[in-house]
Amino acid sequence: MGWDVVIVGAGLSGLAAARAIAAEGRSVVVVEARDRVGGRTEGGTLSDGQWIELGGQWIGPTQDRMYELVAELGLSTVPTYNDGDIVFGLGRRTGRLAGRKGAVPRINPVALADLAQGVTRFGRLARRTDLDAPWTTPGAHRLDEQTLATWIRRNLRTPQGRAYFELFTEAVFACETADLSLLHALFYTRSGTDLDTLMAVDRGAQQDRVEGGSVLVSQRMAEGLDVRLGQPVGAISQDGSGVSVVTRNGTRFDGARVVVTLPPTLAGRLRYSPALPAQRDQLTQKLPQGSVIKAHVVYESPFWRDEGLNGQVGSDTGPFKVVFDNSPPGYDRGILSGFLEGAAARSWSGRSPAERQAAIVECLVRYFGPRAASPVEYVERDWTAEEFTRGCYGAHFAPGVWTGFGPALREPVGRVHWAGTECSPVWNGYMEGAVLSGEATAREVLGVL
Image (cartoon, rainbow, N blue to C red; front, top):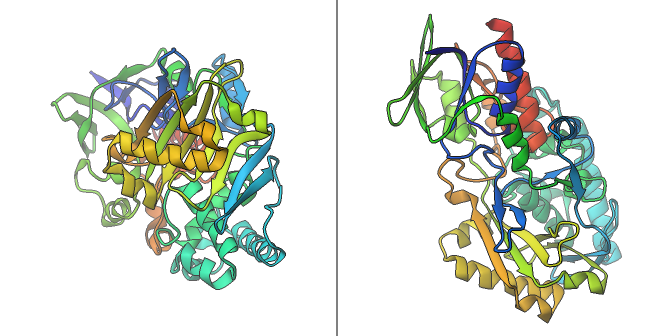
């Protein structure tokens, strides 16, 4: 049997592309390695049956397509709990910060002025970045030849100012400031509006969640589509008449076109015949995934709320540096969810879950006091160890990659097309970007069928 389009990957991007193609009356099949849909979104449950999210979970203002999709699929959103103060620590000093967008950390005036000028300067550079073609940004080569770490050392003078940008990098990119190019950091920040929006709950990227879990979006999108689970793709071949997608167990899917929605580094591990052009293949060698372990720590009650705290943490002292109150509305118990990111994730990934739990609870005690020492349940997902993801939240560009290989990111190779959140100019790395990219690539494919 043949299809008009074969799609590799049943995450948000692949399913969005499949729906758009099917809506035009074209035949399409989605081939997925896992035994579930959703990709980097994944649902889970606690021992009492309460839903949790093991992967991507938030949407926020200007992510219009996700809000439209949630409504279209008969789903609803719930706000991230945000009543009260944030526990915020920079330069080994921990205090409270009002939980609203634009709130100013309580640090000494010199450090605050340094941070303010750094954020302003960074924002000015980000606004000049070309989202559709970052390599054409004025001064692109100069921006792309240096790391974000280099820029921070040159432009921030205080430990607190530097620590803020380092925390931003870990929280948003799940890597270290020395890992990524300054141009990519600027592009990504403008792609998600600005630095403040990326970090905020109130009117920010962490404002809302999908009731029941974000994986429901993928599950609803998959209804009515031909989705083949448990079929990891091993090879893709093409000639003048069409493409063949062959799984590791030898199952073959033939079509006129194929859309690959895997993270670039995993897309590069497939066997292609004929071989990919050098630019595309080398691009996939240079786009590593971020390193992140997501953990849920459950308590008998959300006790931090009694003390006027909203459960959120931003701290430069880890390893558990970023935390949110993930307790759904109406749930009696309290859930603190957070992340080991970047170097911390790499360091702790090789240890046991029990060791990670002990280190995480120790951090929570430091943030919320002795009542945090006695959780009733612990659940985690190490995304660096997931065979068909190998890291989250998305890929990051090292120095020289945008200017050296950028055009190859979205350029089709014959009958092979590319999609995924890494391919989106807007909300790159987020669920919104995944859906937008899938739908854009669907239009591209429909235009040549």
